[in-house]
Image 1 (cartoon, rainbow, N blue to C red):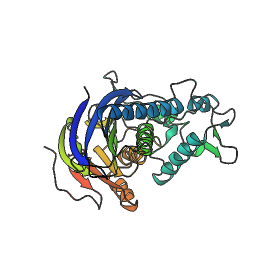
Image 2: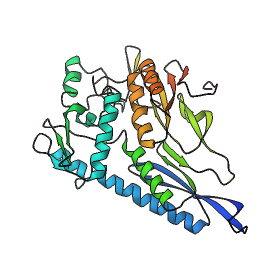
Image 3: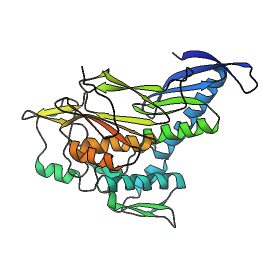
Image 4: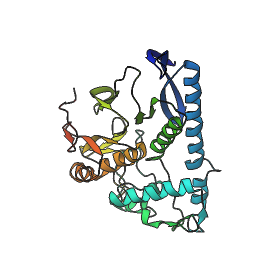
Length: 328
């Protein structure tokens, strides 16, 4: 059900002008998207949302590993065979993904799609995989094996059977692109929530900043803190539901692509930065890197912050986060 709010304002000629906030919830890229825009009238607001949806759909067709016709699928089909010439947009996205792999020491890796799915989080898994099975599962993973040729604009996956996927960065990228298009269309403000990868611009019609809720890691439907954000983005990775317990230890569905073992020790990670794409990638990375290494990395990055909740439900923050709260 679309939501509609309104406020009276004045244009440059001093005439009274009515602004409205229009929101719509859709299923895109296999996930829930909530798109909100501020417009001069309801009809224009829905047009703006439709244009944002078209842009997200375009991105999906470009990066989907499930769409046989996508450039990403073409790259995967030619793994170990030959380089594939791609659009500049996809080339740049893969280039940025490799840069994030570098700064996270491989905790983020779009070639994670090459892993054998030996971990099951649907209740059917009764024992841990063997050490040998885990080692074999990551044999084809490694961002260093993604060979980029800038001159020819080609992408080559060095090892047969390799695959890339944008599951840990794609929705954030789509949110950024939809925001960029909306701003170019003179949409004065809005918020795009791509299944938890969220980006904003402008303010509410009231002039207040957009508020985002940090989910309680014990229950993703409960909020333990609300934070105002302005011209910024946030993404959260959490182990709310998908995990297994062996020997009294909790193993989450977020797998370290370097080792094949699930990440442990953290319940949730929320990253704040300008770009939703960057937030998306770093939320997963910090979850895998762990508290100390993850927070240390974030403290070295400009205009980037983190709120981390460990498996004892204790909150840790990067240097720029200024709030005091505990999950309830």
